[in-house]
Amino acid sequence: MSGVLDPRPHLGEPLALDLLNTRWMTADEPQDLLHDVAGLDSWLTTNTLADRCRSDEPTLRALRHAREAILTAVRIGSTEFDDLNDVLAHAHIRRTLTATGPVDVPEVPATEWLPGWLAADNLLHLLADAPHRIKKCDHPRCILFFYDTSKNGTRRWHSMSTCGNRVKAARHQAKKT
Image 1 (cartoon, rainbow, N blue to C red):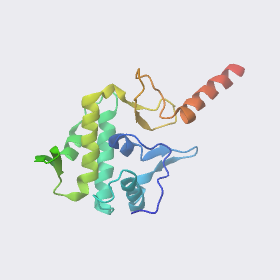
Image 2 (cartoon, helix red, strand yellow):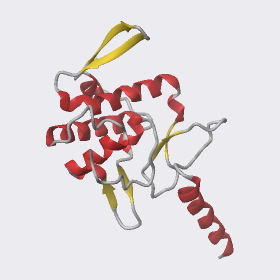
Image 3 (cartoon, rainbow, N blue to C red):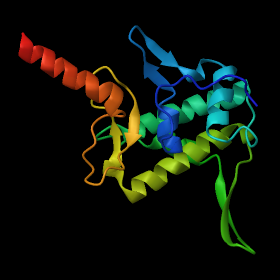
Image 4 (cartoon, rainbow, N blue to C red):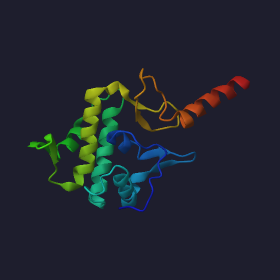
């Protein structure tokens, strides 16, 4: 297990969006958690996948590919799904019945694809349930995504305490000048 804490400003989104949020902006420059294997290990640990997935270069490359495919698929108006379908083609679901009920088990022959496949599969579930609830933060300098769980579905920022307050403060400052 990694000793590296996850440094990202926004955690806890569904797996597909959490993968997108491995890129974020600081005041000065873009950050990328998946720039090395240590960052991959941190992401796997945060998402309770460290015991199921290897932290190595092949997994890192596959996960970066999955991240780009998911990003392309969630862009507004996108009809480019070939890359996402490519990620999904790396596994299939085996359905079984257990004492506790039906279970879907992903079978991933090339294990480096497991975390990316799980994220891509999660995106399919989000799209099937409520695609309009997958949103990019409305702050102009923010690149984070979130799943809008607000009652009326009108949430605009990944975090009201950061991006929402920044927008409101900027509006207030503009009114003063």
